Figure 1 (cartoon, rainbow, N blue to C red):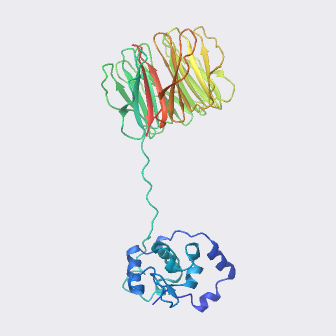
Figure 2 (figure 1 turned 135 degrees about the vertical axis):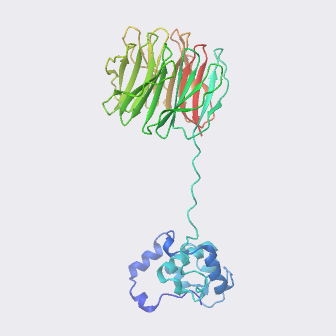
Figure 3 (figure 1 turned 90 degrees about the horizontal axis):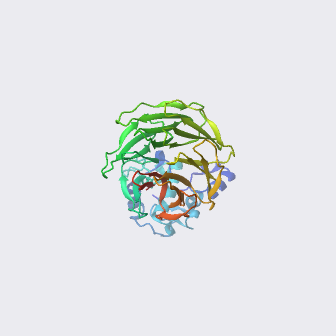
Length: 410
């Protein structure tokens, strides 16, 4: 028997307002508790209309499930077509789902034996979203002669959210990655082989990482977690000190580190747009954080120590990059525009033994390399990776004059 209109007693209990809402409201996905699979609806249609979803015999019921024109209109079918037989099979089933939820399987005399009353399967579940492509790490080398190797896969494992790099005096490069709040350390040995990523901090709560190689062969791994900053030393012999609190203020929003030839390490912290400079002296004591940029508008930063003892602090403000120098004597130059394009998303820096500094910038998925020569002039930004898919960068200068550029891309 076809799908009938609501019985008169039920109709009298439905207000005019409710009927108007039902006619005008957007169609909602059926709930699991009042649904039936497409297979079950096919069984019902086989009985009701011999499975003909376009049937119209002028008996007052239409389509594969023989839905009355009243029910079609009442349950929102007019959003699809004037009559059920003019709608698609899926559209007819979606309206039938509403009728089933309201009147039950009794609306179809063909229901017995089809499982309509007991199926409870959503006929058209929302598709499962495809898993997001994970971020992988790519290693590109700018050789000392100015040519590029080209990006090569360095870490194709888990989804990396950040990468940081550090070079050691022996020619090793540490590629440190952040995955799900845990930190992994991978070494590219001077000969070009890789150690493989190993856990350096498995706590699972790290928000940001920064690394720097020291003149004595140690490497500092600085981590930010919940606004606190921790310093962990990987000694030259490969053992780890363990994370120790370096800034317990609880409000640090970003970090950067730089090493100087005298063994000092500078820790730059960002707090509400203001940059603070803290020094860990070669002997292990700390100076304490002091304002390095009090403008209040910095969103990102990078720092690098130079062979002459200067330190460059690069800051990002509204897409514009500023270069500030802390001279070896401890005085500051003051921030000066280094890239005024206004489109920079991220920055990284690398120092070379000849005194050149590389300012690497990320803009709209493309990577640009700008050189500040030892004499103080700038080369100008040049494309280093124009794939358009890069979402993270980190650069480090090597003792032989090469520069490693690590990029994150899906």
